[in-house]
Amino acid sequence: MSTTRVTSVAIIGVGLIGGSAAATWRRAGCVDRLIGAGRGRANLERALELGLIDEIAESPADAAARSDLVLLAVPVGATAAVLADIAPALGNRTIVTDAGSTKTGVVADARRILGRAAARFVPGHPVAGTEYSGADAAFAALFENRRVILTPDTETDPAAVSTVRGLWEAAGAQVCEMTPEHHDAVLAATSHLPHVLAYQLVDTLAGLDEQQEIFDYAAGGFADFTRIASSSPAMWSDIVQANRDCLLPVIDRYLAELNTLRQALADNDRDAVNRRFERAKAVRDRFVDNRTGRT
Ligand SMILES: NC(=O)C1=CN([C@@H]2O[C@H](COP(=O)(O)OP(=O)(O)OC[C@H]3O[C@@H](n4cnc5c(N)ncnc54)[C@H](O)[C@@H]3O)[C@@H](O)[C@H]2O)C=CC1
Ligand SMILES: O=C(O)C(=O)Cc1ccc(O)cc1
Image 1 (cartoon, rainbow, N blue to C red):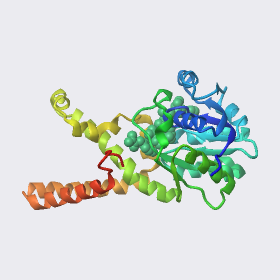
Image 2: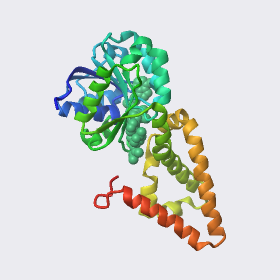
Image 3: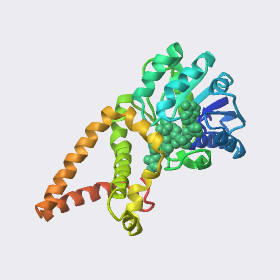
Image 4: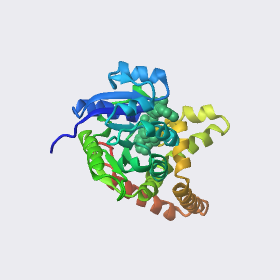
């Protein structure tokens, strides 16, 4: 398999995802020049110091104007503004892709804002990350053996899709394609709901009396369950807002099931409680690699 090569890549938002993509593409030798742009000057300077990027552009439009491919790695709520900013600067062969955690809204933004250039917009989502943000959190191995979902449609230029696929494969990821609607429905259940539950659990406990005691005696399970509540609140507010239509029904389903469990407990129905726990353990054991604890 030949390695995909792109001369100049603009990374808009050199945080955890943009910085990790830059690091892995440089390491794989796919990109000659990495141009960073974004909002926070200190973060961009840090990205330069860490060697994630070769230069800091004056603006996202300046970075886009001088690149063959642009990766948007900004919070999904900022996508429309950044697309509007870069649209007039794009060359007529420039490929644009993104890393946003939701896809339906991003695709609608791209169609509305990019016009004809929307054919060279390849919507993407690396399903890999951590609870940390910013250039300091970036690392080249982030996408190894992880999935990247692309959501092109029949209007998307196949050559653009192939270039973006090649870059993620060079990062060690397994790339698949699906519709943006299917992506958002699946991710609402597997990623967005768990984040909502983790944030709400910590917030609920923090509101109880003697909160200090509660956190002092918290065991490993609490840390495991709530790790993702340390993720960026601004980024996650954007995600849950953008995917409200898919998320609300899965929250309702979860609430209904939690209520059934609560009732079984209230009724002293030990068998019903145990059956649920057994079922859940069997599913989780099947899905997690028992040697590494990784999914
Ligand atoms: N954190 C994670 O684990 C994952 C995040 N994603 C998605 O990737 C994208 C980036 O997330 P992270 O890298 O984690 O965030 P981050 O907070 O580490 O980096 C985002 C960067 O975007 C910049 N930025 C914010 N608003 C901007 C604007 N209006 N114009 C230009 N730059 C702007 C920030 O200065 C920051 O450097 C988000 O859309 C997120 O949903 C996707 C997969 C995993
Ligand atoms: O930290 C974790 O475990 C995550 O779940 C990271 C993550 C955050 C957002 C995504 O769209 C995908 C992955």
